[in-house]
Amino acid sequence: MPRMNLSHFEASFLFALFTSIVLGIVTKKTDRERVVYGAQCFGYFLLALFGLGWLMKLGHG
Image (cartoon, rainbow, N blue to C red; front, side, top):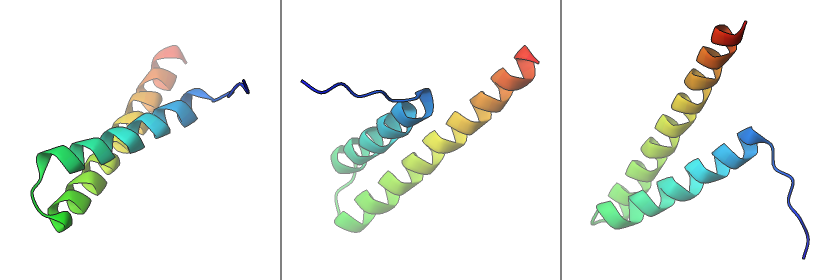
């Protein structure tokens, strides 16, 4: 079986993508609402990813 070597950023990006897709599908009723909410969740995940990354960088010097 082939192994995947993902960086922390790549793994977090994939988690954000798949989680946003699932949240969009299960929480909204129309297709338009699902797409908008999924994209919004994905943006929030990426914002949190970069924000926490910068906080860790500043904390460690």
